[in-house]
Amino acid sequence: MQINNTVDAVGDLPTSNPVIELEGDEFWPLSGKPFFDVVLTKTTIKPMYQLVVPGKFNATLPSCSIHTVLAFRGKNWEIIYHESSSCKRLDNWRPFAIDNNLKVGGACVFEQLECSSTRLVFRVQILRGDIPSEFLDKLNGDNVDAPIVLE
Image 1 (cartoon, helix red, strand yellow):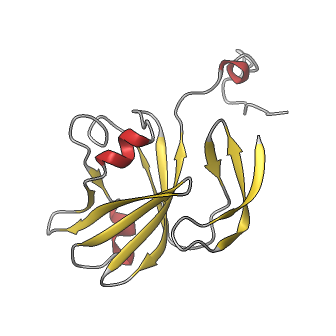
Image 2: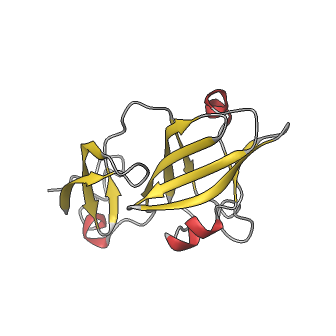
Image 3: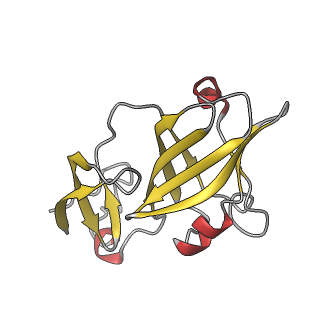
């Protein structure tokens, strides 16, 4: 595990929150800006790559289709946020999903950094769905509700 103060990939400004790096992924405390999370399913990954924004988050998004940036690990992916009468979704997010080896059962947290009528920016945290075996070994078979304690 490595802890860094990092440079924000979107605006090249230092972030005030420390970034924790664990097995190649970055994690940081949310800043208090709007966010939503999505558990990755077969629909959000192969073959369709359809990422629908949860309805509870719709009020913070514009009522038009605009260019959108997904920022993760110092890199940006250009996609399109699309608003229609049936749903709001992130289109063309396939390159992001493939580049970051997203799999069914994982999750993503999308923190909205910028929202205007011309641009939408999300900083993304990826939560992998697989638990390392060294942590699974610590589970007490009698009490499956007990948390796994990391030491």
